[in-house]
Each structure stands twice: as C-alpha cells, then as structure tokens.
Amino acid sequence: MRFFMLRTPLPTRGTALRSAASGFTLLEIMVVVIIIGTIAGLVGVKVLDRLEQAREESAKAQMASIRSGLDLFKMDNGFYPPTDIGILALVQPKQAGFGGGAGKGSYLNSDQLPVDPWGMPYGYMSDGFSYTVWSNGPDRQPNSPDDVHP
Image 1 (cartoon, rainbow, N blue to C red):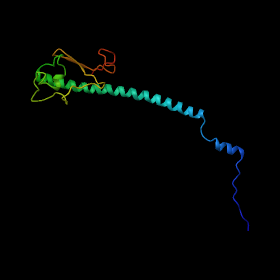
Image 2: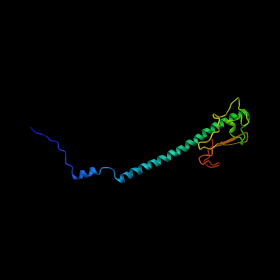
Image 3: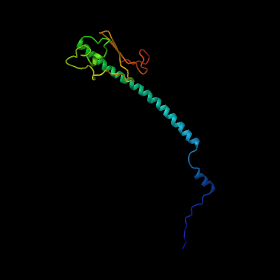
Image 4: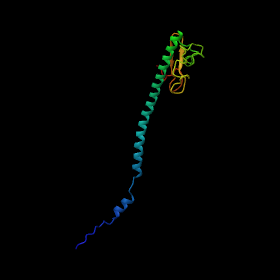
C-alpha cells in the first residue's frame, strides 16, 4: 500500500518577502489620488455650472408668474402698479390701495413678495402702461452683465 502525502512547498526567501511587502506603494496611492482629484474637479465644475443655470431658469419662471399677475392686475385696474408700490400690489392689493379684483386676495399664488433664487427681491419699474421686471442675478448688483431678464 502506498501513501501519498500532499506536500506544500516550503516558502523560499523571495515568496516570504513578497507576502510581507504586499500592498500599495506610496507612488501608486498618489497616482490614484491625483486621478480621483482630477475627475472630481472636472465633474464639480460641470455641476456648479448646471446649478447656476438652474437658478437662472427658476428666476425666469418666477418672473413669468409675476408678469401674469401684472397682466391680471391691469385687467382689473386699467393700469400696471406704479414703480413706488411695485409688486407689493400683486400680493396685497387692498393694503396697497387697489381693488383685489372680484374679491381676490392676491394676484400671485402667495401672499408674500417673491424673492429671486439668490435671495433678493425682483426689480420692477412701470409708467402705468408698460413695465419691466428683472433679477439682479448672482452678483446681486443692479445693471450688471449677469442680470436676468424674462
């Protein structure tokens, strides 16, 4: 009867050193970190650009709502609210001294003045027959290149 024994090879000097030194070198880790940082930088720029674009689109949508309210105000009163009262006449027409139009409390969906996506009130100017609505944009400064108009 013959016995077979399974032999495991004895570790040689090279394999013992290799298993003790297994892992990543500092250079490999630095390369991976640089690659991840580059990808994050490229993606971050695109995401921030889209965020600003979304804010501009939101401002335009809110200004469209304000313009609809101004048109309803003109239908009820025969003129647009004067500049000094502004869009306050849309959210509180009776307090501003104007009729609310068929018992309507507000010409907008809210009883508060809307603010743009950057936290500033919308600009409004009117001579009674026409009007202009705008947002000062990201820099919050009037008459600057980044102002948002409908």
